[in-house]
Length: 389
Image (tube, rainbow, N blue to C red; front, side, top):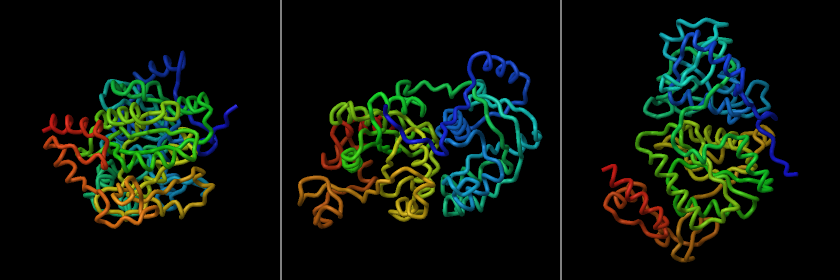
């Protein structure tokens, strides 16, 4: 029997309510005060409900919040955790809520009941301290920090009970919860699985590090993030089309599982690299690829800060193996993909394009060099960018 890695904290959380219990909860929810979750809060609700954020069973209380902000660990110091998961609605909402009150939580559309939560605690957020410790900047221009600042000033803590996941219409075949990916790994006989996280279209550098990682494990979970991202990021449906055409043409089908990660992007750089690794551990992965500037944005983080942070944690606090890759490039000297660890190629012998240059080429209908991206992927991106204007 295939033995899979244990979830973070040892138990895969499942806060979903079914059957007669769900019927009763829905009936009771109709009589409760309503709180509408925004996009990020709804993603967090889904991830808690399905175990993606194990061992969390609800939105964090003050002890957990302060522990994460100050120590990047959950209370007790044994389990790493680097991103606060809080419910901080507008102050006008939290002002009308009291401890012990049960709330009906609705997704952003305002009509789909997510579930309920009994408020265990109400406490003030320390937004600037959170920004400083988690995001390493208090600059409100940072998109993750801006989201923290935009929250209400007080957080509502409590365990959740879920009756529905968000009413998605996209990626129906790829919306696999942690229990489903784990079952998929077991069915395939995989014991070691590497996860690859990206919010960008896949290109040859990504492909190279994925292939390197696949050489040492049983299988790959290609797990792109499709939750809330910045407005100028490539849309999720376009990215998914790129992944599918690449898998169809170049990867062995029996060694790859494609699923989407519904989490919202925080752009927290090093902190989010740890967070992404822990989430993939809950999905059943034993290894996690950490590339250059993972989850970074702008110039807020050093090129390899997201790799270095793993050295600050005891291995048992994370218990998933980070695979750290340097920037890869097409080497004219070597006739293939390489990094500075494997090639003597000088800068002039490396094919490298800036993101700005690539976008200009795509908008003009020009395919970037095949050494940079596969033609099949380039054509999808050209069609998308030209349609967007």
